[in-house]
Picture 1 (cartoon, one colour):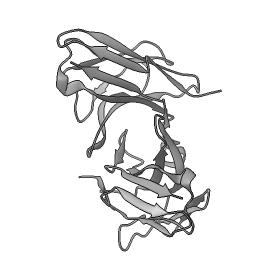
Picture 2 (tube, chains in turn brown, cyan):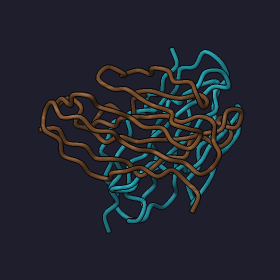
Picture 3 (cartoon, rainbow over the protein chains, first blue to last red):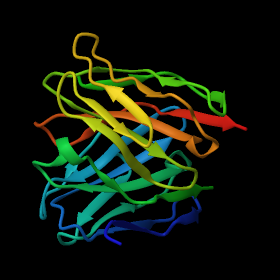
Picture 4 (cartoon, rainbow over the protein chains, first blue to last red):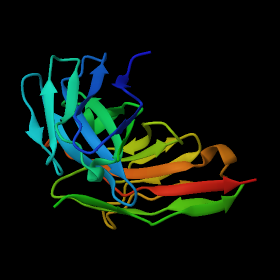
Length: 115
Length: 112
């Protein structure tokens, strides 16, 4: 089925470890996004890529880096994980010009725990 | 700035009860408004949307009307089911810019 695929689904890291969250979409969307979801805070934008070759910071970018590898893939990297980065991470995609009508398509999330 | 405020949860209802989840927004332009639903352990799914004032979005028995005069987009359902138990997010996006703005989410539990 067409959609957004995130890997891994679950991960436990020790403080200071690094990891990369992977995201791929097969809908030929130009724009991709990384959000984190925390209790009582809803979804907060970490980084986004409006199109292949571009990335921009969102509301909470500190401690993260991203790479738009190609049109399909958008990865999120934690260089030195901290307990404050314990969260559920969602990747999403959309097509500029249709976002207002069709919204985002979300992946199923990565639940990350940093101990 | 642009933002969405939705009612605090959690909300617990008996099956077949009437549901309202309030959502108000602040926007610098003319937003499109959305409700997303998140079932346990899953990502967010689009539930319904409205792209201009007075539009009514509807899906699976849920409805919401875009009210520009009150800057609101309240979610309603006449008779909830146990399968409606989920977290509901109100959101807006503008034709300018690149992102959605989400509310904090309202957890709904429907008991038999």
